[in-house]
Amino acid sequence: MNRVIFLFFFTCFFQPLIGQINQADGDGKNHGPWEKRYENGEIQYRGEFSHGEPTGSFERFYDDGTLQAVIEYRNASDNYATLYYPEIEVRMAEGRYIDQERDSVWTFYSEEGNLTSKESYQNGEKEGSTEIYYEDGSISERIMFKGDVKNGAWEQYFNNGNPKLKANVINGVKYDGQYTTYNPDGIKLKEGKYRDGKKESSWYIFNEDGSVHIIYVYRGDEIEEEFPKNGTFELYWPNDIKRSEYTYRNGKRQGAFKEWFDKGEWKNEERIDEAGNRYPIQKLHGTQLRREGMFKEGKLHGEIITYGEDGSVKKKATYEMGEIVD
Image (cartoon, rainbow, N blue to C red; front, top):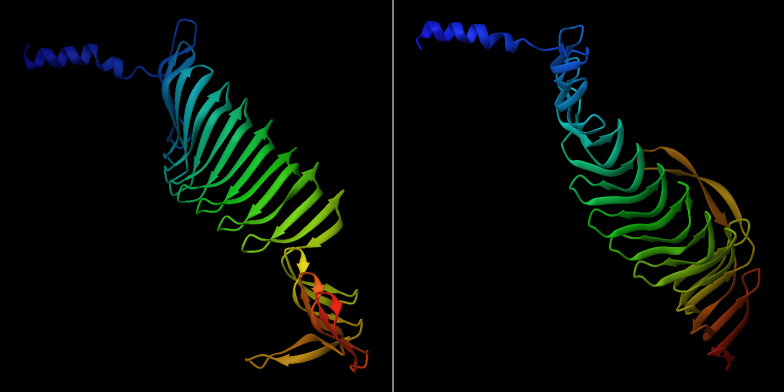
């Protein structure tokens, strides 16, 4: 076939096919390649229809011509979409649509392209696990949903992988059941139970070394009792003057202690900082020790001194494991 005959053949038979877009079948339904444009001339979408139903891959664009979405049609009601950020054409999200509602697992990404979350859907509502991630891809949170509302286990993590929070949530806002928080080293900070959004029963507060600091007993979200365990505890009179300072070890008073009278006065004073600026502070004046000494395994031990409100020594006594020996 010479060149002239070939060009004639191509022109007559193939060129008309190239321009056959936006056609309809015998029933007037979209059929074959289709595209639509914005008023500014930029393409809005392009894809292919089969007797009125989208099929295969569709591309949608923002009005500036950048890619908005790629949709793979499995059938008229089931498709998989990849969505893009405007202007930068970086993947924003991807997942499945059933009857135009989100379904199954959807993944979301930052403008830098990093995975930010995975969310489970059913009929357009969050159902099941949602996971949120740090920039490095490690998990930050895992939350259970039911009917688009938080319901079930809720876990948070530090970016080193150690747990930060373990709890259970009902109706989106109420804690219910076991609740535990941790420090970045994985050591517990607080642990207790909720019942219908209220603290109930024994709550444990921990020291940095993991030992129990204090136990609070709750009834109906109110503290009914408290039991110091390990560490130094301070109590105050209603006017914020210190009342006592005790140190506990394994639930028993241990080491030095001090007790104060309900005596003293807060006075305003002025200070000057390094830049010469004046600022007010409150300083406590006129406090007075009532008693001081030592405990050993929860019992008075060693010299115990008792004072009068005027500061004079009223009494000195020596104890041996709670018994006066001198």
